[in-house]
Length: 88
Image (cartoon, rainbow, N blue to C red; front, side, top):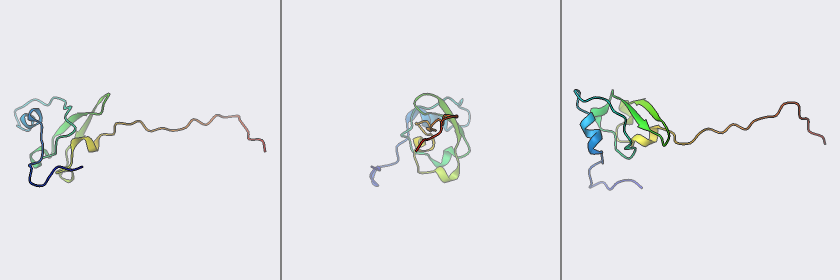
């Protein structure tokens, strides 16, 4: 469910401090924060539940949430056993 139109977009206070150019780049755990136009061009480490994944913020990402661009699930590839033949 999206945030109401009459409310402002949410951004975490710690992430808002990082948008200043003199601030050091620390990882962010706030996946629910909305991407502001001031963040375009920054490389932010975003937590995916286990690791930090670094993403560069592009202009197409403005208005979306940070968590949308970092997957939290592993891709599953079934293992195929060699040497087994099907008998019909």
